[in-house]
Length: 299
Figure (cartoon, rainbow, N blue to C red):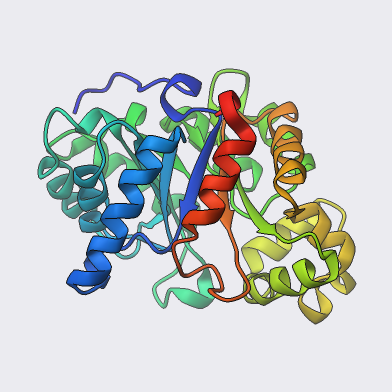
């Protein structure tokens, strides 16, 4: 892999799909076929990028690239604590050379409560990027993005990668991140979607996911910086917090919310579909189709 950049909007498209269900290495043969079929459909629907969520392995990434033909494939986000730079480089080398240009390595430092060896995350990321620069094959800055929330990590993302992939953020954070990154770096926030016109029920579904993330200080510290209070974190999240972090409602409302992030400075928005029955762990193919139709040529 060369050090040339993959580009931003032209490579990622305006809208992508983020899913933690695309871990091919974690399922049996039947589950693997379901993932392959879903990926083939995403390839056809017109989404620019598929993000493999939930701390994917390098093997997951290679499998998803192999199962797709044209869509950009990104890890969202591979934890630097779980895999060495050398392991990642070896996995990249296993990707068909003709397809490597579609792969983008999303990296993150995860969270202290989830990683026993967690220490000096910024320095650890710098060291990891140095190791990637020295690895074979070369996984250069033009083929990686960083999970970045705060100013220091956002600057590192602009300096040492294509840009940033922030998770669980508001449009206000998107505007601030664009200012911190500058005009040229990629900004590709994740946005969680609940397609449900009953807003009380949609918020209940959203709280089932948000409650877990509100136990992680990286996210709560970022939300406090944005003007939310500890009171907004009670009970799985206040209405004000939920409405700022999620796209709730019908497909038309989701397209409006997505445009708000794009208008705030995002180049690309990665949509994660959350359903009440699957809790975000399944393959919501009907919802993917519904949104693809709603976005139409905007994808």
